[in-house]
Each structure stands twice: as structure tokens, then as C-alpha cells.
Image (tube, rainbow, N blue to C red; front, side, top):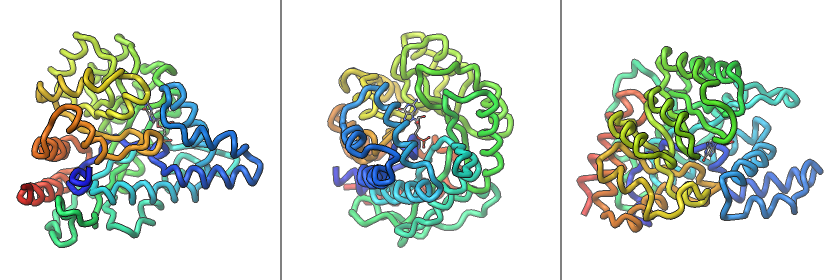
Amino acid sequence: MEWFASMPKVELHAHLNGSIRDSTLLELARVLGEKGVIVFSDVEHVIMKSDRSLHEVFKLFDLIHVLTTDHATVTRITQEVVEDFASENIVYLELRTTPKRNESIGMSKRSYMDAVVEGLRAVSAVDVDFASRSTDVRRPVNTKNMNDACNGTRGKKIYVRLLLSIDRRETTEAAMETVKLALEMRDLGVVGIDLSGNPTKGEWTTFLPALKFAREQGLQITLHCGEIPNKEEIQSMLDFLPQRIGHACCFEEEEWRKLKSSKIPVEICLTSNIRTETISSLDIHHFVDLYKAQHPLVLCTDDSGVFSTSVSREYDLAASAFSLGRREMFQLAKSAVKFIFANGRVKEDLKEIFDLAEKKLD
Ligand code: 5GP
């Protein structure tokens, strides 16, 4: 586990409100309990429960959203989440979140996202590179400051890019608003759009106009795909050819064939799949088949807070469950650089970081 923590890694599937520290959630719940907004004793066990069905996970998100409604809290959780990922040597983080409107406290989707960006600015423990400058001239990687992989030193710099999530409960208009906001915020590190939310809700076709518009405008797209059996939706999502998909748990032969021939990279979230019982055990997890087929893959946490995990833990878990050695795991981490949504300058920097770390492997 320590070795995986010291190795540089890339995290491409992390939901902001799913990655909050338990201690922060409890603190926020206590404050709202004191104000009489919630009954603390009712929610304490919900926060601390370790195994949850997919249905219970979405109930928990509704509770988390009650706890994190105001701008200052959004800023705080963003700062903490970035610091937590940086502390385990994540060198590039694509953080996704659903812009939220809450008229009662004057929150618009834009002001929610401004609070997120404020959180990125507030990080002091590490140097955060979050603005996407497409015309940026590449600067040499400072090897002294950069994460010194495999010798246990603490991360000094993290690249962060943002994905705006469309929640499956939203309307076509709300989804379009999110895409327009993403376009407005391109200079603030927004690189793409995610479709997520309870897979039993909504129709994917509702979001197609917004997703097509996003694509036309050059935003990159990742879709939560196949968390529950839904052949028609899975096929249609694959036909859309998103830049990446998340999960891919409930595919049948035909969908596997389509996926493999399309080479769409898959964001794999082992602990999340097991905890939510979308996959019954690791020995039948599709990671094995996709890895053997050399299909593009990246190991991710999904919701490190909700599922009490970290990227290092996911690597450790995969290494032991699938009998993979350190070198193979390092190559898996390095290959994820190819699937990031940030521009070529960032890719070049990351490649250099991984090349340097590779030289130090035993
Ligand atoms: P947020 O977007 O509020 O920052 O992060 C929490 C939200 O991410 C949840 O309300 C849900 O919409 C989405 N989410 C988190 N984990 C999952 C997951 O495993 N599957 C799906 N489909 N959506 C998720």
C-alpha cells in the first residue's frame, strides 16, 4: 500500500461530494444538528455506514448535498479533497461535480462553480495547476519540486481539471445550462462533461442535445455507462463514442465487442462496484478481461469518502486481486496519462514525471 501511495498516479473519476472526509461530514452534520436543520443522531450512522447498496448510496448523496449547500462549504470540501489526493501522490486529478442551484441562499450553478474554483485557489499544501491555457508554452518540469515518486516524499504539485456533471434527474434545459457554463469556464480549468446520477432515473436521450452541443464545442465527454442492465441505453451510449466511460459493469457479449472495437477507455472503480454490488466479487470483475485484452483502462476511486478508499488502495487492491506486480501497476498508472482531458502541455509534463519515476523503480 505504501509503495502505491508513493508512486505517481492519475485520478480521472472522482465526484467532489463523494470524496469528502468523514470527519468533515460529521462536523457539518453536527453544526446543522445544532441549528435544528437535521437530527444529528439520525444521520451519524448513515454517514459512518460502510456497506451500502447502489440505492442507499444515492440516498446518502441527498443527505451530503444538504450538508454541503453553502458556498463556503463547497470551497472547503474542494480544498480538502484536492489536498487529500495530492497527499497520496496524485499528480493529475480530474474532479467532477454537478453545478447546483439553490435560490434560497443565492446560489446559481455559476456561483457554485466559482466556490469550487475558490477551493482550488485555497489549497496551500501543494502547488495547484488548474487553469487550462490551450496556447500555453510548455515550461520544463521542476524535478526538485515535482512529486518524487517511489521514495515516499510528499507531493508538491498537482494538476487539477474540472468536469461538470449532468445529473440524470435534470431536464434537457438544465443539462444545456451546465454545458454552457462549462464553455464559459474553460479558462478556469473546465475540460469536459460527465453524465452521472442515479442510473435508474431519467432517459439518456434527454441529455443527448446538450452532449452533442458539448462535443461540437470541443468539450470532452465521459458517461456513466452500464451500472445497471439496460442494453438499449448502453449500446446507444457506445454509439455516441464518448472519450471515456465509467464503470461498464452490466455489459453483455455484444456490448463488450462494441466497446473493445471502439477502444473507448474505461474508468474502473473496484471498491465502488463491490460495495454497491454492481459486481458480486473481484474474481469476476471485468478488469481482468479488459486488462488481458489491453483495452484502455484507468483505476479510479469514484467516491473516496463514501466508499472509504483512495487511489493507492485501489491499486493495492487490483495488484493483490489480479496478481499484478509493481512494474505492471506502474505501467497501468502511466498509461492513464493518454486518457486525460487536459491539453498536450499537461500530457507532456505528466509523461516527464512518469518517465523520471520509472527510472527510479527497483
Ligand atoms: P457531486 O456531483 O454532487 O459533487 O457528487 C455527487 C454526485 O455524483 C451524486 O449525487 C451523483 O449524481 C454522482 N455520483 C457519485 N457516485 C456515483 C456513482 O457511482 N454512479 C453514478 N451514476 N453517479 C454517481
